[in-house]
Length: 304
Ligand SMILES: NC(=O)c1ccc[n+]([C@@H]2O[C@H](COP(=O)([O-])OP(=O)(O)OC[C@H]3O[C@@H](n4cnc5c(N)ncnc54)[C@H](O)[C@@H]3O)[C@@H](O)[C@H]2O)c1
Image (cartoon, rainbow, N blue to C red; front, top):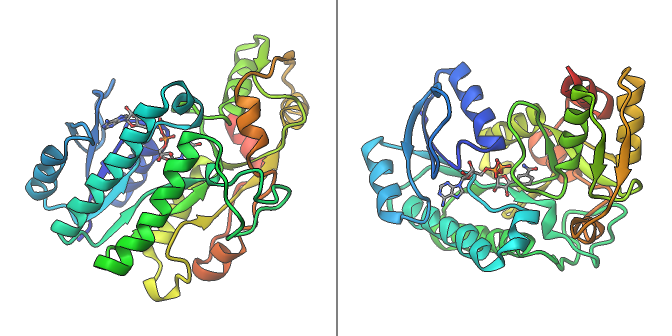
């Protein structure tokens, strides 16, 4: 029986993983540094992922055998305090790796990001193994994490699985300070009937994915036979690519009358160093990745 620990469980992704596992009746211990604002559908313990002793105690107490490690400071927030971002992203990763080895954890899911790529990665369509020169502290921590995944597998047979998520579109939980947050902000402005000021230029193209696909892809990857996985690090994955201008047109074509101003800020530079499109053929081939939500389906769902 799977007994799952989720760290950073109250964030954009964690909230949705909890709902998913609840439907399957799987035991979940959700942990986060903050307290939930409502009653969760699973066990909860407040815990700082930097506190290795506490996380280790929780793993033992609840007989955990699978970990979803979701704690991170995301791209835009990370640039505000890069030292803090490095400490949290790397030290929490190290803690989870050590705890997993010590407790014979079967599998760990740890999301990477398209932020691992950079201007040298041929951004029009980024392949699985291009040159990588991440420009943000967030992207750097993700790339180091990917290398550590490979190292820990070769050294300890620790089975960490990972996806290089693009921007995730979800409406129920607010995004946590990434460079792709504009998509949700714009959709929410349309629903509220207020003007929106976009922090990216209208022609900035970035890959995105609907939250249901983000959850299902992780679950499918985690269920895959290890022998089918040809990549020890993180897999490329994508849903669709979109620009703010294209998003605005989609929103209008769904009957919303939205006015958008464009005032690019520091996030424009980050977006300019990220892929326009991503080649995820290795995911399709190795573990059967098959997105359900394209651009139109995602916008319709998000506007509901
Ligand atoms: N959301 C996206 O668009 C996206 C894209 C690519 C990759 N990812 C990755 O997916 C993972 C989850 O992202 P998310 O969007 O849910 O992030 P989020 O910012 O919404 O949630 C992170 C959670 O971690 C918690 N947290 C912060 N510091 C903590 C600490 N010291 N101890 C315990 N909990 C702490 C926060 O309270 C928050 O609830 C991250 O690794 C992120 O890099 C997300």
